[in-house]
Amino acid sequence: ILGSVQKKLPLMALSMTMAESFKELDTESSLGKALEMGCCIQSSLAKILAEFEIALEHDVLQPLNKLSEEELPVILKHKKTLQKLISDWNTIKSRLNQAAKSSSNSSGAGTGPGASSAGNKLEILKEEEEEVKRKVEQCKDEYMADLYHFSTKEDSYASYFIRLLEIQAQYHRQSLGSLDSALAELKESHSQTEPSFAADTLVVGYYGVPLETHLKSLGREIALPIEACVMMLLASGMREEGLFRLAAGASVLRKLKSSLASGSNTLEEFYSDPHAVAGALKSYLRELPEPLMTFELYNEWVKVASLKDIDSRVQSLQDTCSRLPRESYNNLRYLIKFLAKLAEHQEVNKMTPSNIAIVLGPNLLWSQQSPGDSTVQLDLASVSSIQVVGVVEALIQNADTLFPGEVDFNVSGMFTPPMNG
Image 1 (tube, rainbow, N blue to C red):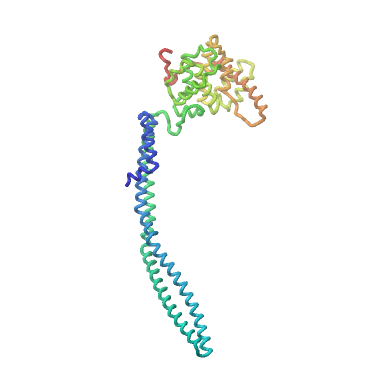
Image 2 (cartoon, rainbow, N blue to C red; image 1 turned 180 degrees about the vertical axis):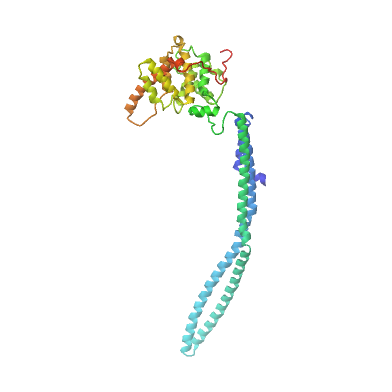
């Protein structure tokens, strides 16, 4: 019985679907393990639910059905019969009273056939009234006996509802126990597969995720997409003309972004397409919820752009850089040092600090949107864009002064250029 009930449950169908799915996956992968565990727990939950339904039917529903279909109908039938007999009795008593009055009037008028007939009718009604009264008393006794009998079993009937709650409590306890056990096992397995991810900071993909969250979740200093793209460009893109300016193919760019978002470090196929790599880096920077150079310091950066004296500008750049959050500072330093290295090849790649700033500046710094006249906003955006380009150009030109020391671009040691690169 248990097996047949279990097979009909939606949970069992879900378990079977999961079983079919994880057959196609690597059983050692996190998704494969999750599906396999999910299959087992859904099957276990289906068994617990089937046991609950069987116990519910046997211990609660069947006894209550017997009560509602056999015992209660008898009581209700006797009650209905008693009500009808009482109604009939009241009717006969009313007729008897009328007949008694008629007989009294006839006897007062003297003797004769009318008086005799009224007397006979009165006697007949008295006999009928006595008969109905007897039936009422008899039916009343039967009805009361049923009620007394029912009252003696009242505690047992109430126990069925107690049993219902016990069965439900047991079902939920067993289900919760199975879920807690499976969840703990799955979390432990997942933490062993992905040791660098904390459960409370796990994020899906890296694009569009706050920089601090991304770095914390992976235990990194430099954002993975930034390091990966820089390492690929250092290997095969530094002499590519129009880097960051020329657009890559949409499908290749989408594939590379997906690979980076999945945390893959097997990116050999993309080394041969530096424009796609540059596009992926630009997209990452632009999709950050807050620009790398931060909203908070936006006005400070813009002020720097207005300074004409070179020494004052460099000093202001140093001061503003020092006010960046540690995560933003480290990643900006890493990126600017790379862009300065890229500019060293400007005679070949045509990417001067100015050209680099024009194409990358708006991806490094932008203002928070505020409501207002759209025309005014557009004019302000044009002015600020020029200022942003000026700031980023100055950062690249003064990279060694602002960020002294060499940078190990392969900071995580994850990325190795292909042997034929």
